[in-house]
Length: 614
Image 1: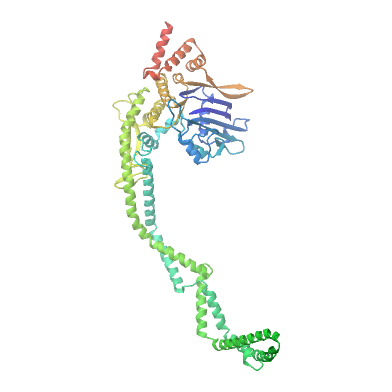
Image 2: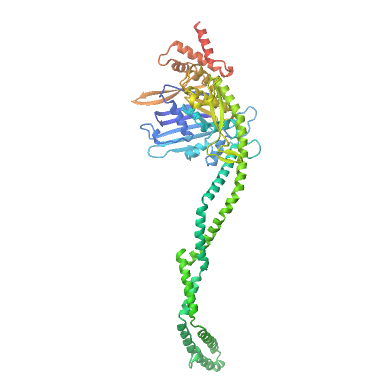
């Protein structure tokens, strides 16, 4: 539950700290005193948008802090740990929490949330001292607090919300009872998403048939040109080298002949003179072994000179002009240059582009195959989605009657016993047909709440017939109906009593008191009949000091202080003994109301006042 809310530098608040407790916490005060500022601050704690606009004049920063005490195994801690946020200091309870023994209270952990807005800088959010984004904060605290504002009943007029409310009652968004498949609604949405993805792919392939054919023709033309040339990596460099040799054949032959003559072929050639040196040293080396090494070097040189001469002779004989081969090479090189210029600027780029175009053409050719393959996939996905949609439909139609009866029972306790709420179903928008069913994002139907205010009247949409006071009571009745399946620990009601009074207000106070027996309730109200039921009563008031207005929150002690506030709510500025007596009787009667069933608190209060008058 929410235990503490601390605010500073926020709107007309200098510094306020409010401590909440279990049961029904009531905030009262004159209009404009700042009651809803506390609710707005709580919105920020839950991840709402925070900007410098909320700063009080003269304040450098606005700070909102909230301290929660939650079961140690609450999902919020797992979500925070997944985001890297630690537990509060000293809170090391394992998750999930161990079962309490005997009469021990369940283990709890504290959660401290802090929002800061400063002039000239972006707002910041902290959880247990760790800096987080507002989106992480909002996701982590989902399900901790449920805020119903004085205008939230308008959401009941939005048909788009009705199906989700019915699903919450039916439990279709709760984990499946059998196996690890998960919530039925989640499974359906996954199946529907898979079906729509496949149908989009099919429609895209059909729509792109003409474009795909044009692209395939273009690629085939380009590939025919490249295949006709059939370039090989590095081929242009090799052919260019061969072309240069053919073009210079005469020069090369003359060079080889000249070198061969100098080395081997003519009188006085290098090989002849080296041979003479070998013969001259052969006898001398026999006399002095030191001449042996140079002699061996000369003999090796003579062998290599002879081999070089023979190689040059063979080269000169073989090299020669081949005009036909030269023309062939030049034509091939021109063809390679042409495809290089057209496909990337180099032969390597053209070869790579050829492979890419071949792969793309193959993929395009496979488009028809993919289109054919999609048909059975779509049929299978449609059958699965239709099966899950059928399960959803049966669960919703079964729950619709029970939901209407449960809300009607709650409305009876709110002086709307003659009203009848029904759930109507219709074909969903944005639908597709699969498995013989018309399916939408949330199933095979959309839901709408209809209200018949009086017996004999046909039910009609809420927007056409419900007044503000009726919508407030319907909202509370719906909340009360869903409370049995709602894991939220704290309900906040911000002036949802708008447009009601008298016995209806007393009935609403009783219902709020009953709700608070199972969870914490925080209620901002102008009605004394509701305030009388409070387990913890805070008064919000404005005061002026030094030419500035500020808002203050005071916890009213049981007894005279609380009685005075309830009397003020009834009588206004003119306090009378009768108002005080009435307030005391109302509080005393309300104190026993939850345990006394549906007997009227206002009637008991009147009886007490009558006895006091006698």
